[in-house]
Image (cartoon, rainbow, N blue to C red; front, side, top):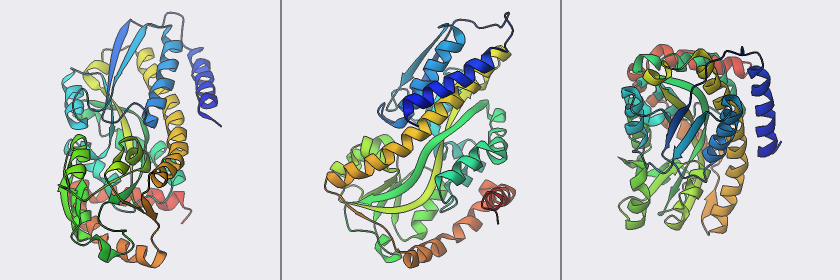
Length: 337
């Protein structure tokens, strides 16, 4: 099903749901600002467009949604803090920077936790996703939905990474959280935490050798202009969280709150589909730009996974051993183990 079909199907479902809302439903005129750290041509843009169309239908045009891209309102963590204080309505953020607010979210940063997109959907849309979302209100945040950031892969300007030894000494930008830092230090790199907005320039000037992100981000951020190699490591799957300010959310009527939940779900389905289609297209564009792309053999990948296994044990104190046990149990159920 293409993106337009998904939008139509999602809207049909939400309009059906809206038909049961009583005639006296309270929908006020509102302006909602959405902060994003990524570029508008990222699949998040497709999701936001679908969400806006859904909201327009459900509110009769009473809501205005303004999206701000490429960290125009600050980085993900700054935007999330603005939500907590009630000075911004919504942010679509990778879960990883939010570990600074809720350490349990670090579970999504554990290396090689999720194997494929089907596992990711089942995990995030099921009981475990609800369990994680239920942690957010105490931080004055409401998680409306999980969207897709995707599997992360390594790009660099030094050499193809085909084995554990190839990581040695490479200066790798990682997100500003301790699990990614621990993972890449354990792999033997010189891992350097850095805000996303600084990465392109750091790669261009040679301040760092490498970075790790999904193919779509490598493409839309034009990292192929300043990198030579991409290795299909798929070392982590991180979701986007569609977060709303709880202080503002609490002023909305129950009907308005449901509109937000329903329409972000419409956006989720469109965004994931667009993300997966664009990932293949992005990989091809990266190759067409002249980058050397390589897979890693199963034998070498097993050695890499074994090397980072201690990260789970070291992360248990910050994430919570119970959270790690719960996610492993849920994944075993999904895999039919």
